[in-house]
Amino acid sequence: MADPLDVLALEPWLGGSHARFLEQWRARSRHAVEVRGLAARHWKWRMRSAAWELARGLADAPPDALLVSDYVDLPSLYGFLPPAWGRVPALLYFHENQLTYPERPGAGGDGRDLHHGFTNVLSCVRAARVVFNGEFARDAFAQAARELLARLPSPRPTAELEAALAASAVVPPGIDLARLPLGPGAPAGAPLRVAFNHRWEHDKDPAAFLRAAAAALDRLGAAGPGAAGLELVLLGQRFDRLPDGVPALLERLADRVVVDGFAPDARAYAGLLGSADVVVSTARHEFCGLAVLEAAACGAQPLLPDRLSYPELVPPELRPRALYADDAELVERLVGLARDPAPARDPARRATWRERVARPHDAARTAESLDALCDEVAALARAANAPGGPP
Image (cartoon, rainbow, N blue to C red; front, side, top):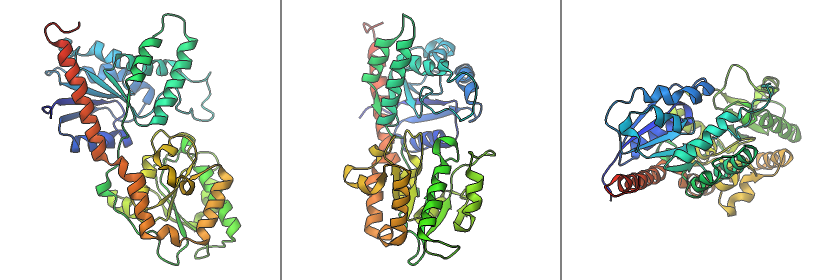
């Protein structure tokens, strides 16, 4: 095994899942990983200015390798780094990208700012290795980047991008299974308990989830607390402005909501997921699916749209139970499970979701993969920088 390395992780958006990803890696890595970052706000300004801001605090001896997120303008970063850092290899990790991330409805303007997407492309070209958080994420970025380059005048870095994509890797960000124990689901005799634990923003489409829950309740004839039907566990980050239609739907479903808001801590969050029979996603954009993986680790049956990154999360033999085709099928599945919630509370079935869906995304596996990639790029950099090596 190679000697431990000094690795510096730079993250302009050090919050939420980006921060958890790095903290989980640092806690498990056999390398000495240092994390430096900026507060998770003003994302456009972070993409423009973070290279300068992060580089100006780096006057120490260079590390063996860098890991930077897709928020970093990597060519600019190398331009601002001290000269001794010029040959430090960088892993570029894509949590999302600026070519396919959905714009907020009603944002106005003349469309997507392609400068941010081209920054992602140039960062790929400059990186020693590009890493995506899923196969769907890699495929979506590759298609969008090729379409962008085809629109640009020559010269354009088409061959260089293709080489970077061909050598790229997929490493899911991972979940902390040790903090997500298997739970029993709702108590026997209770209504089907359905969790929604995503950000309450347009790309996760919480309105579609609430509409499906309301339609399922109408079908079941539910008429208030204690009636046969559904209970809702509503988690996930919320903001001052909710997507259109959500406030009215929340008011309509208020008597079916048993939990509404952030869990006070990680232990309480895991307990709430473990008390849920089902976890639902209605996302219109998803590159990874960490919220679903966390719920599956606690035993909740996933009900996921058959699109985006979700099919790659679920083994083929479990997809008929986990994936739905459209909103109408989601309602049908909720109605069927509500009429007979016992299977969703079966300990063996709940353990299957944990082992077959969540276990492959354990943060320990993520750390091993990232460590190995750091070893690889550091070894290549040493060979290139050795006397007689390539310039």
